[in-house]
Image (cartoon, rainbow, N blue to C red; front, side, top):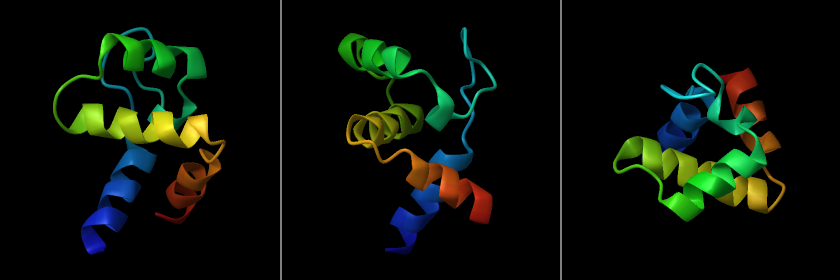
Length: 73
């Protein structure tokens, strides 16, 4: 449970490390960009897992959860 909480906090505070949207919080990336990445294939490793979570949250209209986590942590 603690690992899930820590992962959520990390995703909420993670900024895109490269590319057109470098420096933007993952949760604030445009939906079309996340969908494009999903279709292309998320990168391997932690960033890919984080982008996958952002995709699922955006798909279900729940991205404000990450914004709330970011405000608290």
